[in-house]
Each structure stands twice: as C-alpha cells, then as structure tokens.
Length: 313
Length: 313
Image 1 (cartoon, rainbow over the protein chains, first blue to last red):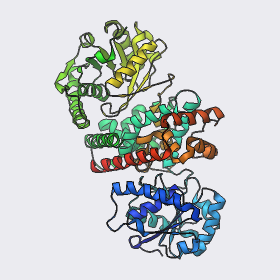
Image 2 (tube, rainbow over the protein chains, first blue to last red):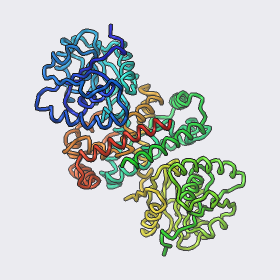
Image 3 (cartoon, helix red, strand yellow):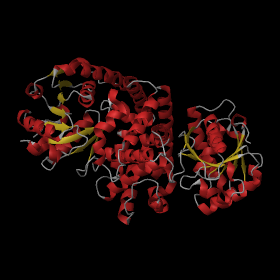
Image 4 (spheres, helix red, strand yellow):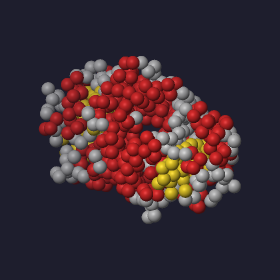
C-alpha cells in the first residue's frame, strides 16, 4: 500500500508558521527534498528567517552528508505542492474547520499511498479526518516546538486511520531522525502535552494565589527537576532514586504521599494493578541494569548537561 | 546576630542517606570543612560509597581550588558534631516526630547565631520548629536529588523563623554554589515539587487508564518538553514561542485552551490579574531582550544539551 519508509526522498511541508517551516528545516537537514507550501508569497520572508535560524542549530547538531538548504522549493499552489510528495507533514492553523476543509482537499489531490501526518497539538485525527475521502492514510505526527530541535513525535490515528499507517509513520519518523512515540489511545493533549499542561496549570494556580512568580516557576524548573527529567524522565528518576527497591519502594513507601496536598491535582487510587504497571514498566526500561549503573549514567549525563547549558549561555 | 555568610568555613551535615551525604559532598567540593553526623558507625560504608560516587560528578563540574574530600570528619555524637559548626544542614528521616525531637535538641546544643537548614521535602518548618527552643534561626533549605548535582534550594521559614534567617540562608546557599529560591509563602510541597507532583499524578492517571506506559511517559518527557524546560522553564518557553506578542499572546489567544481536557487538573480562572502577573513576570525575566535573542539562546543551549546528553550516554 505505501512506499517503503526508507525509499521516501520527497516531502511536502504545509504551513508557514514556526512548526511548518521548522519541519521543513528538519527534513532538509536529514537530506530530503522538501517542498514548502505557503498560502501566500507574503509569508516568504518570515519563513526564510525561521529556516535560516533553524539551520544554525541543525548544523550544530550535525546534518546529513547530502543535505542542503538549497533542496527546498516554495510553492503557493496546493495541488502543485503535493503532486510529487512521498510524505506530507501538515501544520496548518489549529482550527477544526480549517483542517477539515484542508483534509477534504488533500484526500483528493495527494497521490495514492502517500501518508499525511498532522502536527496538530490540540485536535484529534478522528475529528480532522471526518470529511477526508481517503482517511486511512491520515495520522497525527505531533512534534514539540521547536520541531527542528526536540526529537519527540507523538503518533496516533483517528477512528478511520489504518493501523498500517500508524506503524508506517513510526518507522518513517525514526528513519528521519525523530523519536516516535506511538500512543495507545486517542486522548486530548496526547501524552507530552498533558504532562506539561498539568505542570502549567499548577504553575498558574501558584501565581494566581501569590505563592510564586513566573520567575520563581522557571527557576524551580531549570535548576530543579528539569535537568534530571531531560536525562531520565520522571518514572526512572523515582525508580533510580529509591535504590535497589526501585519503583516498588517508591510506591509502597511514598504511596500515602499521593494523598497530600502537594498539587491541586488529585491522584488516582493506587491500586495493585497501577502499582504493578508502574513497577513492571520501570523494570522494562531498566532492562536488567541495576540502580548503581543507572545512577552513574544519570549523573554523567546531568554533569554534561549542566556544563553544556552553562557554556552555551 | 549571624556570622557573615562569606565567613562560614565549617558545616555540619546531619544524616547518612543520599541527601545528607550528598550535601556533605557538595560542601566539601566547594572548599568547606564538613562534619557528617551519622547516627551509627554501621552507616559509614554506605555513606563513603555515596561520597565517592558524588565526587566523580563534582570533579567533572569543577571543584574549588582548596577543596578536598579529606576535609570530612564523621562523628556519631550529635553534640560533638555541631559544637564547632557555623551552619547546619539537617537531612534526618522525614517523620515529623523525629524532626521535632531533633530540633528540640539542636535548639539547645547548636551554638548561638548558627542557622539550621532542613532538607525536608514534605514537612513545613512551622511544624518542625514547634518544640525548638531557638526557632528563629531554623529555616527550610530544600534541595533536589541528587543534591550534589541539581543546583536548586528552596528556602522558606516557619511561623517563628526570623526573616533575617531566610535572607541569610539565601545569601549563604548562593555563596556555596547553589541556586536559592526564596518562597513567598509556606505551602505544602514548596514550588518545584508541586510542579513535578502535578506532572507525576497526571502520569499515574494515564498509566492507570491504559493511556500510556511508564516507558511512554519517560520518552515523552526526555525527548519533548524536558530539554527545553531545562534551559528556559515553562513560562519563558511559552513567552518565547509566541514571538513578539510573548506571554500576552499566549494567554489571550490560547487562554480558552485552559478549559480543554488536556489534563485532569482544572485550571484557575484566567482573571485580568493573573494574566497581568504572568505577562509582567515574563517581561521581568526577559529584561528587555526580544524574542529573537531569547530564542537564539534557547536553541544554542538545547543544541549543546542534546549533544552533551547523547555524548555522555
């Protein structure tokens, strides 16, 4: 049904904002031919500026040997923009009626067997694909801003998406240098945004109550949990912090702390099933490595991170 | 009342766990004489192991010219341990009755004018100092694990704490190489833990509902928001992502998204007052720098962070 993911060489990115142009920059740096669809020629100067800025970072991270910023075409006719595409990354404005109309049209004009990924952060694919005549090949591929830097892409289909599209997208994004995360269910906000949003809403509550300023919030994050979260995530951070007992010790010993008013968010009931899922999940990530080895790696990476951030300031 | 913060040379760290010993390691690396109080000689091997591990990271980050791991004394008699101290960092077990009994005793035996900082992450100083005969010089100095790596120290007094103790502690911790954050109010979980806990509870909800595995949670964080949060915090991340309009654009445009079910945590009402606090706070942090400058710094630091974490894996 689809081209092999490793055979894709031509990508069309739809959208002139930081996400659409950021994606174009990323794909260019990985050696693809990229067509960037801009609604209007008036968007070109801004798009060029985003591209030039992104290229500095991409060069810093290392670009593919055959990559060139010159392999970009900017096109203002949608049909022309998608006519030779082997993958479409759509980053149109976040309004459902705009996306639905766009997918109705894309469904007709995008060549058969070409997957269409949406950068949407707030809509579901079930809603976006509602009027698309070829919904099976539509899927969400949600990046984090800036998309040319942060590796995460959250992938999930809508009700009419073919499961093969989801696995194709995961394979393709990984080959294209991203870190794909295939979601188990279509939930509002996906995974990363839900986590960030819970934190963000707690921050807004604190500012509203005079408990912290925006500066306090950012200081707390940058010098506290964030560097560790960037090298371990929060599950493994707790798993490793609890020594040999790991996540089991964390939950069995500190489980009652979930009842404490340490945030406005009420915790779920800590059932045996939830406990076991957390413990098993951490053991899977650990893959037999003991806490000493994991802690040593954590420390080595945090040291490198702190020095790098300091030196690049 | 107190010694000048810059004249402190002798510190006593109370506690043989990762926090107490981690603090000892940090202070040793900054050139202090450190007395480590361990309840029992049986704790020595574990403490030595934590210290040796910490020293690898501290050496990597850069230690003070006069610093030496040999400037550590291990003492099992509490009175002897504190007799020459010029600052006390207390990291005893997190049980209120243990802390209260300890502060009753410390209040008597710690030399006059010496500040006592507590590493507690879950108790308030108002409760801890309840039976202390000299509560004015007691204050919370809450580190993030591992305390020899993560710079944050959250500082807040209890009801009987002298305001001068809070400002002394902030000055002292900064001189000792930490990033102090003085809290505006005594709230459960302080600031960083509340933010982390909101995120953690959302993660538990997702695992409980089969929406994500622990591995999904960690992937989402490590490759998504965490690297950016480590260089900007969340307020400035949104401020800079919104271009010239900054946080005002974020709240005015995306404010309605606070009503969306993107987390289980209900957002506060986005009043004019809250909006202005957020906008003013971000403008203060920006200190006149435009979004292009801030975005360029963000990108430079994220590139350095990603390369450092990758190379140190």
